Image (cartoon, rainbow, N blue to C red; front, side, top):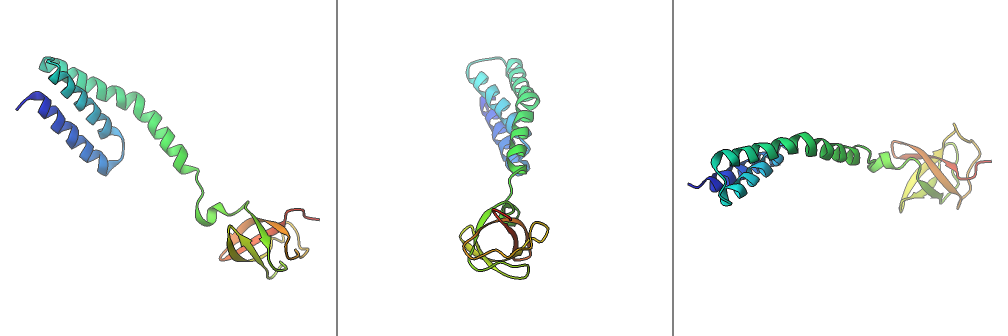
Length: 148
């Protein structure tokens, strides 16, 4: 069996492990093994293939992996979804909103609402724009955009 084929088998095995670990380490080892396979096809001696494979893998793990992980963690850790994304959203009252009851349209859906008494206790008229401060169960706590 040729060294290039062995390096490619090693690269595919590393990719298979990376799919399950999602740690980027084995993915970079796969890149190193692929580079060793390319050097084998180019006619490099076995010791040079090993140096290239290990060198590319270590360089990737040392320099590429930290940057990639930082980027991945930054983009996924800060994203708010579901109910967590609603505070701060603008909505419109479709009935009078009081301390006890009311209805609003929020992101195209009808929600029960009540005033956030920490901000205001004056009822909000139908058609008034409101801001959601928090969600309590299935009820949005709101205050008018222009509190008086």
